[in-house]
Amino acid sequence: MSISIGIHDLSFATAEFVLPHTALAAHNGTAIGKYHVGIGQESMSVPAADEDIVTMGAAAAAPIIARHGTDLIRTVVLATESSIDQAKSAGVYVHSLLGLPSATRVVELKQACYGATAALQFAIGLVRRDPAQQVLVIASDVSKYELDSPGEATQGAASVAMLVGVDPALVRIGDTSGLFTADVMDFWRPNYRDAALVDGQESINAYLQAVEGVWKDYTEQGGYPLGEFAAFCYHQPFTKMAYKAHRHLVDYCGHDADKDDIARAVGQTTAYNTVIGNSYTASVYLGLAALLDQADDLTGRPIGFLSYGSGSVAEFFAGTVVAGYRDHLRTKANLEEIARRRPVDYAGYRDLHERSLPADGGDHSTPSQTSGPFRFAGLSGHKRIYEKR
Ligand code: HMG
Image (cartoon, rainbow, N blue to C red; front, side, top):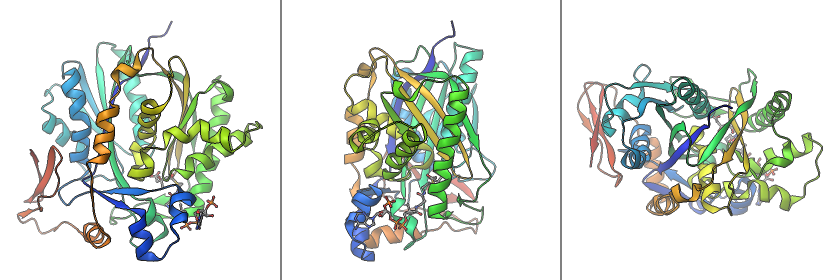
């Protein structure tokens, strides 16, 4: 019998500020129904000037370290597509901020929004090789599109940290995966750009093609039939996408499902994403957090995960919810993390959006804005300086 490996703990952090979509709609004259109903977004997290993927990643992981210690963690994998350095892994800064032992391997992974799933699967491989070890997986991203572009309403920021190990307390990850890769230019960000480039409709079509591709492969690999799953966690660039993707999967499988059936399958996974926005690599696992926090007892039930990253790579796999999982959830902390964000008005959001870091190698401090446990204090000699509060 294969050993049980999966998600032992999960914690998330988001940014300091929140912009309600009503403010964006008032600025650009969009009917609010397009945001609230059409794309399914209420608000989006906006990072403070002294926040980035490192501060959010450390904030997400700190409660996991506080609960479990560092003794078993020998690997940190940080997945991101909003990298802060072309060479050094953002995970090394997080490792330092968290005080992890020097006997740790740390690496950064990238494939658009799919990166965290690659990290999770690689972590499972490491744990299978040595079941005494745990891996800290951190998905951390700031989603940024140009002002006044169609993508602007689908920005956001968050980090999810997951502790992966044997006999997990939350979700056991299945051995069977459906895989899909296609070379498409639906969304990308060249190294010289701050904001992503995207072909909106093409990206939705590419996502739906990937849904078909992963499901076909998952079935061929001997995965569960569709009807076995209690719920489905999809990558959510905007929450309506989960509904679109599930409708597409159900039709592809030739099943009958009305609106309520689709809502039952994905509705509870959208609660956090609808107020945080797109958190790229973290998004599918924020979906898991929302589902576990809200659903009736899921013990023993398989959940379907569909991870999509533009460009594109996708994976479908099952996770089975473990008996006693509710004793290990962080529901109160999760709700507090969302509620603690401070509203920013449209002008304030625009200022933050347009900020860029000086590239002259001088000493530059960032304004002290975040109330989170870690801050990006500034630059000195091209080096990023981080502080603990
Ligand atoms: P758009 O052109 O602004 O919006 O782009 P639209 O005209 O397509 O309208 C959106 C929906 O709102 C439509 O519903 C409208 O009917 C509806 P649908 O036909 O899709 O069901 N609507 C209304 N509903 C109610 N009341 C109203 C109203 N008006 C309109 N008054 C788009 C939307 C998502 C394309 C744009 O925001 C965008 O380009 N976003 C960024 C790209 C994106 O999120 N793509 C998703 C798939 S790719 C992906 O998931 C990967 C990604 O996360 C990156 C990565 O992997 O790293 C992006």
